[in-house]
Image (cartoon, one colour):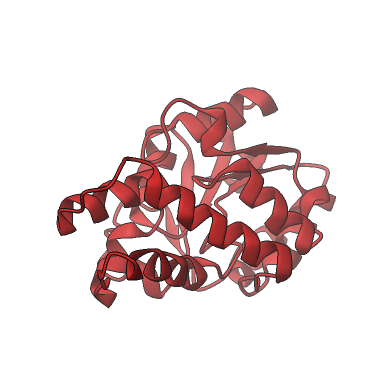
Length: 219
């Protein structure tokens, strides 16, 4: 990747900018208490980077639950939105610094590209005063197909009027990496504890944190 050719940095949300994966795991656990279902810790890796609808499908099939499609998602969203109204979600290391660095640099556009819903991401950004750093925000609500389909990243590229080879995606899961590559973008991955066992062989670079990203573009 020639960093001089990069015009846009496209950030994933959960697990990349926000330390929210653990909170979402707790929300699913709370939802499933009513059905006397416990999620084994190893299953959370299967959910990383997926939409709530994709996770619901996995849970229903694995546990043979007799519930209406959307019921678990609705309850999970209620729990999460209430939590975000009342609390700040902790940021990943150097998240604010990275957003500020790229937003203030005249050479780059900054986009948020998330499999989360618009209402939820709006709350997270507002609570942490991050909204101003993004030129474009694309959520699962804005496209037909969420990640690992490329739609979310392609929609951001279209709005920013940039080509795929002018974009660097920053992700934390194999699911997100697949979406970035399918969109034709470069992709750096920052694995976390919920990405154990993910295959990142197609990543252009694997970083330890967003602090590394700043260093790469600051050299």
